[in-house]
Image (cartoon, rainbow over all chains, first blue to last red; front, top):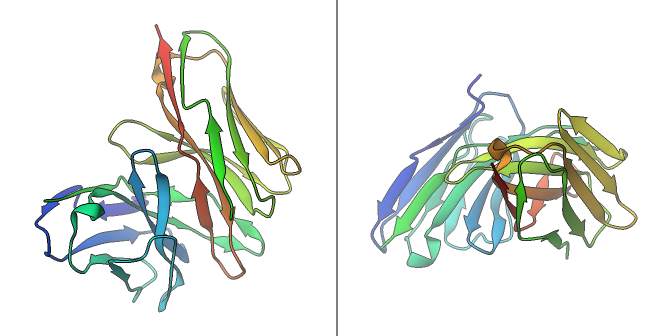
Length: 115
Length: 115
């Protein structure tokens, strides 16, 4: 059981370039989300999805785009990379039963540097 | 707006000591609270999940408590070992129906256990 898989693990981009960070989960979780982690700021929510075809913005969505065409995959697109987007990006998934939310499972992260 | 605070930011203890990490949050309307461990350059590993209706959870040498009314959680680590050295993060979950599971993170406590 692979859990949550993120690719690539490391990436260097030039300012203005675009790229897609991949995230896949094999646990049939309905809820998926993207966070960024910056020193002194903790993890902050970028975008999330409650199921295929449904996405919404989190706390820091500007400069990022997402889509969810399948339950398994939730890619994060950087439209025009900026140095302020240098960060570590984490994808997470979980499921719900009524008002209960399961533990969130995280991928190993993508370390992105924009120069 | 929900805010999560972790104190202390860093902690160094000798091997074998029992220790307590603290997490406080400002809004008691949460689904659950989750404690994570993060090793340098790695992803987040879930340690314990406490649903909002529960008071504590235990796993091996770890015990987490939750007091929603006071907005506090503690993570107790018994008989600490050098392998426990890591950053410990707490996160509260909130959402507005459906499967949303937005996590609000604290900035973590960096624990060093000296041999």
